[in-house]
Amino acid sequence: DAGVIQSPRHEVTEMGQEVTLRCKPISGHNSLFWYRQTMMRGLELLIYFNNNVPIDDSGMPEDRFSAKMPNASFSTLKIQPSEPRDSAVYFCASSLRKTGNTDTQYFGPGTRLTVL
Amino acid sequence: QKEVEQNSGPLSVPEGAIASLNCTYSDRGSQSFFWYRQYSGKSPELIMFIYSNGDKEDGRFTAQLNKASQYVSLLIRDSQPSDSATYLCAVSQGGGGADGLTFGKGTHLIIQP
Image 1 (cartoon, chains in turn brown, yellow):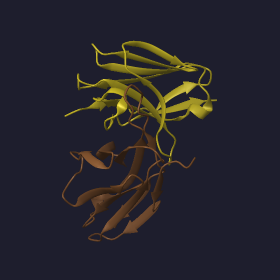
Image 2 (cartoon, each protein chain N blue to C red):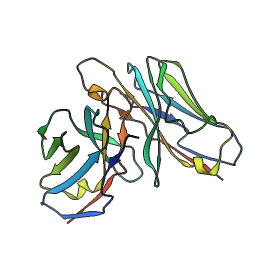
Image 3 (cartoon, rainbow over the protein chains, first blue to last red):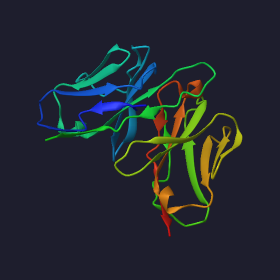
């Protein structure tokens, strides 16, 4: 079974450019999470979706960040305009939300973003 | 503000010994507690979860939870060099981890051969 797929794996861009990160969750999973990891702040939740609906976006740092999940098999995280402080590894994770079960979150390989 | 605190380490443990990793959390409403392992340059992977006070064992790993003290720990018995990694403690308000996780910054564990 394919795990969570993220693209691109590496992205280098210049300040002010638009960046779009993509995620394909594990087939059949109905919850999707976007996290960001830096040395200074560790791993932080940005936003998560249940059944394609955004549930909690309180972790999205600014209006420059937006996330969408148009269908169960695809999500995007967009940064516009990008800034050097956005440089981080962005992880997407998915889980199967089922009552009474542990909703293990499976992480993708991450996208390493560098904003110059 | 929900916070999860871990000693960043590095924690150095000889091979074959017991490694003890600790974590405290600030939100008393937290219901689910997780330990993830992250190798350098890789993504986090779940090792164990625990919901109830007490101990939970899985192979060489034991998770311990004390909700009154807001304290979670992970013991690794018979430590192996392959256990060298960063261990992330995570908590969730939702049952079963259905909600987003709040992570600590991790403890870097080094198992010395």
